[in-house]
Length: 316
Length: 316
Image 1 (cartoon, helix red, strand yellow):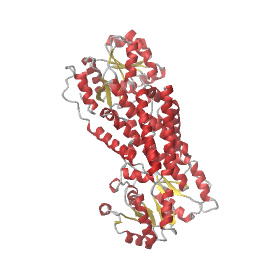
Image 2 (cartoon, chains in turn cyan, green):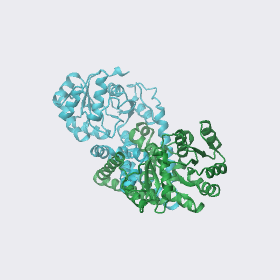
Image 3 (cartoon, one colour):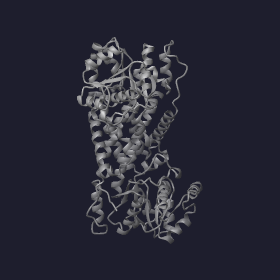
Image 4 (cartoon, chains in turn cyan, orange):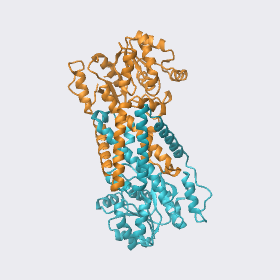
């Protein structure tokens, strides 16, 4: 029921994620408009028929008048300034975000706009490309969109943010901020580091090696092509969780190296990796729905989190 | 000039690689036939209209009568028996292979059929699937196909194996066996281990983590889905070269972990990985040809290897 999304949507930042969201909502006839600091991006978006502007104060006053949902969609380094502007010009608007690391964004919101009606979010969608030119209204189709689900969240606000994700074409996954950050360290941020190491080792061998590189190298190093500053902002913002997954990765590779050196065998790592990949494929294929929860009923947030922790999703 | 391939082709082993080669050659009207140990595979191939049999001796006698090129296309553990049978029933046929690790296959040939006219080969093509059911006549289209190019190779035999690769739709990359094995450790075997570790760490976190897994995890762990026994045969057969690349990978990840822990930064690894990925994309896009070499002229093999080491390819 995408029509649950009653409010207009105001998007701050029109890069890959924010721009794709603006396009998807506007293309579907939903009232949506955006801000971007770069006049070139504003010009591109406007020329493509979208409602975009470069005056942050004016955009936020319009959002306040509209009672719009405001979506933070800038890189992390720009967030504090955005949040301060929201606190000044549109303090009562429902606020969400589409930024990778949830505890970090929640802390920035708590510091800069402590009375915010804030419900965090994170769509698991992206490409190695960035900026307006990379935007795609279908970017979120079928993607998982985490919606922050702490115990004290307002049910109506949570419903609105979930409706935004559904309207974008995504599937909602309710989670606590810290559980989300550990999860994305494991399945998104850590893969960036292993891809980088794999790429660097491969390219360091010879021109012959890169010439012979085929599917395993192409796919395994794809995310290393993402703009370095975007990768760093994402990974360094989740340093604690990432240190744990990176250390486990190193431990597993050292154990494999020792077994290969001493016994000529990579059996354990290959078997563990194969089992993990099969499990991932099963999870990706199934999408069991969260059931028996009414949002707003006693204990609803904890029950959503519990079921999502098992891999289930929240359908409209 | 695919017509350079004058001889019939006899393929021993009709799994993903051998079966795809049989289909491609036969579909193009070239005389090709194959052997497989499994009667089920022979039945499948025959039912699909291909010339396949399960009697190794008979197939090899036919190859000897035909003066066919014999292609070793079984997994490594079956190679010694195949080579012994070739030595017995078709000793004067030109022999090549499509198996991953070249020094290992060359040693098996030297041990089991020392007078063989052997020119090794390795098509850089594959999927996470295996067996006849996964075969695809277009598997080699545009793929790199390494052809062993030692100083003492017969020019006419080398030309025939290169013509086979071209006829399959591939691009020929001349190389020494040991240089090839170091290269594939870096760009194929090492990525299998980093993919396995990445998958195991991701799946170990929670059902929530696998539910949130998106493109970086899907692509970065794809090869971990390959049958473990195939991965092991390939990786463990290249243990020495793989130990070097794996150790370098571990060193890079440890340096990144220390920098993240002590300085909150992953700058070096992310920058190195990004630069390496860009370099790979440049190499993949360009395919400069080897020039100025006449196969058979003095020093031709060394000159082919030298230019290929820079990333160039041998075009028909």
